[in-house]
Length: 83
Image 1 (cartoon, one colour):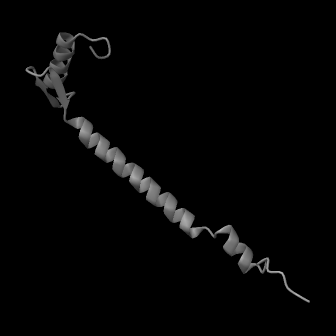
Image 2 (cartoon, helix red, strand yellow):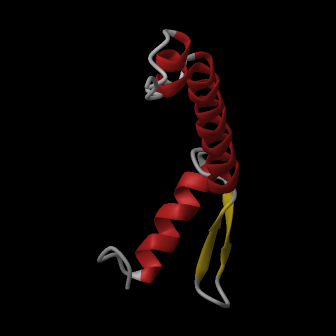
Image 3 (tube, helix red, strand yellow):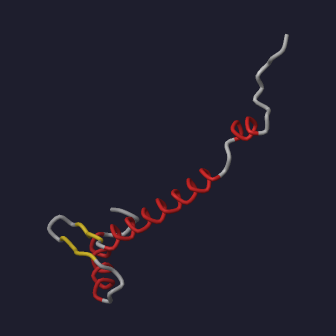
């Protein structure tokens, strides 16, 4: 039993929600499973949004100068010299 809901009650609730159009999926009474079809598309959409956010952050970071490159450009290469 998952989430303290009896299997018969879970099936009844899922069937009602599917009938009302609030849930897309199917009920496998033989194996006692409820398959949710919306979950995969929602997960894929969320994954695409996270990927897009990561690409934007990476683009912003690429536009920022690296601290070592900025120091070298300012003449603070740190090389010791002289005799």
